Amino acid sequence: MKNIIGFFSRYIPRHIQQRIAHFILIILSPFFRGQRYEDPIDGKKYRKLLPYGQLNKRENALAPLSMSLERHRLIWLLLKDKMDFFSANKLRFLHVAPEYCFIRKFKKQKNLDYVTGDLISPWADVKLDVRDLPFNDNSFDAAMCNHVFEHVIEDYKAMSEFYRVLKPGGWAIFQVPLDVTREVTYEDFSITSPTEREKHFWQHDHVRLYGKDYGKRLENAGFVVTEYDYISEIGDELAKRYALPIGETVFVCKKPE
Image 1 (cartoon, rainbow, N blue to C red):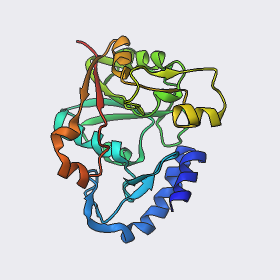
Image 2: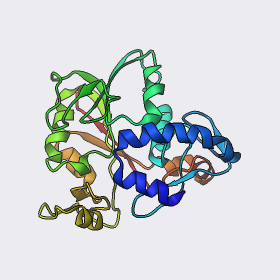
Image 3: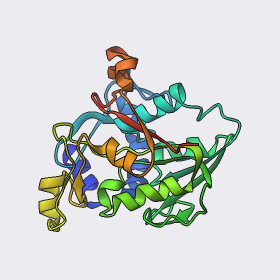
Image 4: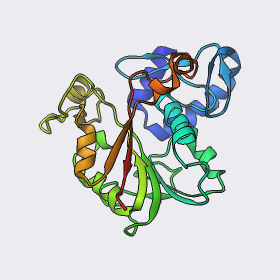
């Protein structure tokens, strides 16, 4: 199972992964049911979750039915407990590279004017390039774009585009793979081969490895950045039950009013 998941996550485009995996995991999910773990997104409980990852397989990472990973479950809890995402009267929300575990849930939210975008995914409403978003200035109340900037050489331009399309006072969540042992983000654009990129940047299609200065890079694009260590607030017991990514910070970025 680990080898199959590793192959899919490394060599198969994400939207195809999700389409195929969805049907397979519906069949397999009854064999994983139990009480040890809980997916807060759909409330399903499991005795174990699936491993996931390219270079290093993470145990108990992927929830079979929602297909949520650790970071998705953490973001869901933060949106529910710390943001006005579910309670605001109306939010125009831009979701770029939309994750399968969120799409159907967000589409059902009556308080959202929900717009999805992606460069290649057939599930997205709008085909777009994050370096040149096809929206007017001040168009959205909120946005989310996770695990995308590490694929984009001009990441500052992409960050600036999100800043442009957000309304004053609007907020966004931008998660990336983060190497917390690095003070400064590691970039070397002369590294172009997939093998070398995987070695240096953790994945064959990454162009950098972000360090602890990631929040500063977002601030340089104009955002006021809050770094939430929300797992510490939740506590160890719930963090284990929800299989959350221990040590991961959530970057909530606000455009000044």
